[in-house]
Length: 229
Image (tube, rainbow, N blue to C red; front, side):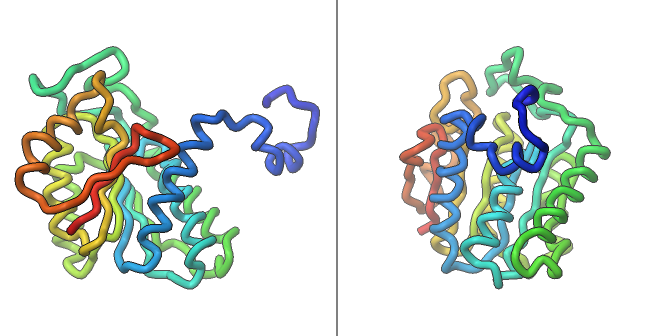
């Protein structure tokens, strides 16, 4: 892609030439889930947003499927300093342990906010922008703090990609209480044996105590989601 003989404008319009099938499958999976919340109210949480790709896709899906829904706020949570909270319940690896997947702390949080605003401005009704938020810090602290500051906020959808047991469990508990009936909690790693945190939280905590149905994405099988009963 870097050496492709075309202008920058032409490259931007030709990204499908370089889009791997696995990334396209991921985008289709997010789209499939997003379409299921169009008719229900609530914000979107991206817990463990990393570089923010899921949040940006959701903003663009909002513009496509519900361009006049200005109350569909997206809130991203991350330390931006890498994974945190690994314990004896987790299976740390070179790729998944405390400190991996850091992207630059405060600088990246500011960049992601700027990027989301630019997407809003370039979408339909772009004069209405700045509704999304980037919240840096430990989600075990920042999610309860968010709901204390915004007690009126309810959720239609939450993505989880925290990959350590205790932060996943605590974040889920906070989110589930605010998820509307029919709302969706989506987990990127629920069935991956190399990253057991989400599966353990599901088996030990969610399955026995929370009414839901469970599904998997037909295009991206690693993405499993719960629909609140």
